[in-house]
Image (cartoon, rainbow, N blue to C red):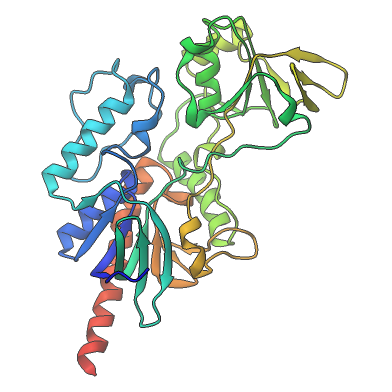
Length: 358
């Protein structure tokens, strides 16, 4: 790319919960920055959620710093509620979000700065906050015979809502909250649903307070500190045992089966000879961190993940990751945004002092 790079102190990639929280704290601190977001409109990953996920069914949505989300209709789609809230938040605090902008690569410019290459040109930055989340990297596992299946295969990222599966035989693969939500609502219109998970699901009965939250985050944080790919916080908290889940267990909708041995053209087969016919396989198998654009910086550890201390990448102090690993929750993203900016201010002050001394 031969274009002239635009200089800023900090580039923030992503305008979801983590990115907007970071931009809020950067703005308050008076740090020159720009937010680059590849989505077509405000709302982060929320804008792509299925219409039947109403705001009242959202699991753990926390307000952004400095502005509460109030008066939301619990029956409205969460994509609309959160999208409107994020748009109002950007406008209220005058956050500088450029969209749609796709970031293709972040490189070391060789002069102490970073070169951020995008579909809208190039930025030169002293530091970068990666807040890209996971929605753009749905995880599709591979199983024998998968390519022979004559029905429809889709991922949670493409789930359109239950009505499209009326009268269908559906296998749902995955042990998380999304899988449970899909099963509960599809079972009302589908001919049959079958739930398949790699491990037996763990249901959490009772409250989930601050102590439990800290313990769950600590488990994820430990992996990140070792340079392993992060697990989501939700994956270590268990499935909440609410009234809808209790009803699903009682009716047999949430009667889980072990993972199949292989996929056939018309369904799946288990090692014991059991068979299930299916028109649809829905992979509710989670997501991976969207960090491919950071590859030129060689941040990954041998274990496959990026080792992070707090929010700072251990291999390059100019790079901070928010909404990654232990901060991959709405409340965690809020806190991580503030923590990243505190460290970035120290980094920028040191750089300024070194320049003055020359």
